Image 1 (cartoon, one colour):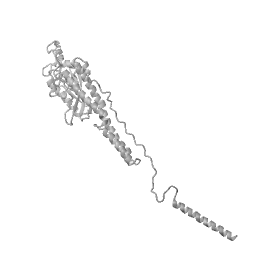
Image 2 (tube, helix red, strand yellow; image 1 turned 180 degrees about the horizontal axis):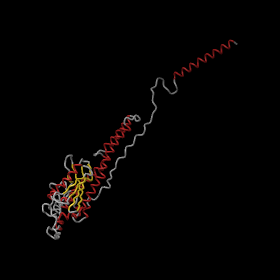
Image 3 (cartoon, rainbow, N blue to C red; image 1 turned 90 degrees about the vertical axis):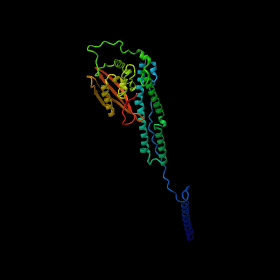
Image 4 (spheres, one colour; image 1 turned 30 degrees about the horizontal axis):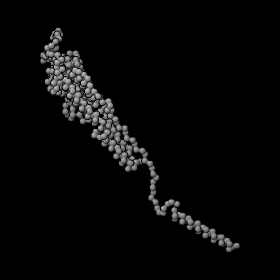
Length: 355
């Protein structure tokens, strides 16, 4: 009996030893699927947030560009053609100011938004890897470069700007062809229907015709020009001193004051009045502010006065600064109101009427 107990105790001891050995072996071999030796810590994979979308690129409305360049051909009389040319010039200038210039400003703001998008949301943001930040930066810079004036995004703008410049030069040339300015002769058809100087003179009013300070009478042709209204006033902002209806005032207008006065007003004034009217225009151009007004009064005649007022100001892509100015002249109780466009290419230079 005692011998059997000893035998059982020995079996228990041997079993315990075997179990310890198995545990040690399992610990030595490690968990299933793992290799022996130390392992580096691998952080869990965290998904990057979605990159922000690029801002919407401004679009240029090229469909609304006025297609009126050849409309003047539908008219027969030269001055009717000139009036149609003037209307088209105003239309394309309005498109330039209201569509083209705002688009360029919008593209500049678009480039600023691109730069801000990277610097404020992606660059140095630890939620994005360095590689992701670099890829986004490259895409933003490519879009930014394409939005420069010479970039692919402004191809449509460059095309419409070239068309605008070509059309404006063409219209200015056709205007002079139909009115006799800028070296063109007065059209023969207009010369034939012009009223002769001494033909069919109306009877003078009691007390005689009004005289200027120098003793001369107001130019009858200038009066006829005023009656045509928009046909002559502010035609392309230029001076048509040689046109029928303004013959005889070309030297005064295109000389000392031609760069700032419009023919329809200049033809009603004597030389001293032209001088003060021109000085009023120069005064407002120096202020370069919308709403700026300069008034003038005739130094030679009572009841003759006027003013110049800036109604718009803009800077063109080539750096030229332009003003829209409305001139008013009151002569013998009759008001004449004419708009003109004056520009300068460099700071410090004087403004002159666009021809």
